[in-house]
Amino acid sequence: MTRPVSPLLPMRYSAEVTAAKERGAPIVALESTIITHGMPYPGNLDMARSVERIIREQGAVPATIAVIDGVLHIGLEDAELEALSQTKGALKVSRADIAFAIAERRTGATTVAATMIGAARAGIKVFATGGIGGVHRGAEETFDISADLEELGRTGVIVVCAGAKAILDIPKTLEVLETRGVPVVTYDSPTFPAFWSRDSGLNSPLTLNSPAAIANFQKVRDQLGIDGGMLIANPVPAADEIPRDEMEIYIARAIDNAERDEIAGKAVTPYLLDNLFHLTDGRSLKTNIALVENNARLAAEIAVALVD
Image (cartoon, rainbow, N blue to C red; front, top):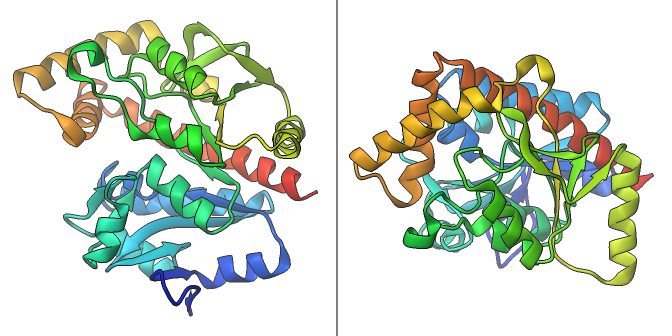
């Protein structure tokens, strides 16, 4: 059974998350766009269940976040997760439209920004995702910059990812994060990763080598009263990566295809990811799943360290 938690905001915790909050157990938030917009059924459901299982194995509780029929769900029961994995036409909601989805009683999958909002509202400190949005290539003409960066600058959640998606302009993305005062920490590597690849060719602003060190860094930020999020970049396992030089060839082709087909706005990222799936003969999706699972494991370890 799920339980409403606010007489004002239509919001529910899953039974597992409710129990975790009552006993002060570590919780890891998960986004839902990867389920509705990232891959087809039933692979998306298998991936979602696998990620939740990995978090539990590390001693934390998963909380997949989504808006379902106008209710903000913090954690999904398995039947709800399965239903969402087969939902057609779910909104892709960010800061600008999560309240719209709730007000209009729509179903919406949460992006990084919207998941951070939901996690912060529920008191969840750690969030695992695949890769964050950022500054798109050519943004000097299109002004296409993800709301994820603004959210990281204002909402106090640790976001564990495999770096910014490699389809983006990574140097400009790091510059915006620096401007927003967001700590960017690469886990156990001096170089910032590029999603499908372990090395973007850029030095990481900061490096830490253990979940305990990351948790301690956040505790000191709290003591100083520093608000906003922290970005933890976790390189994809070496056995699963697609080397950067090879991946850049595929990305260039996918971007050319998007320009040819006049793709813009929120449609750009899913279009490019679908193109890359076909250009790499499915390797990009396999790597995507591996890095999400890797991020979930590290996020759970950080969440556990925060409550120790």
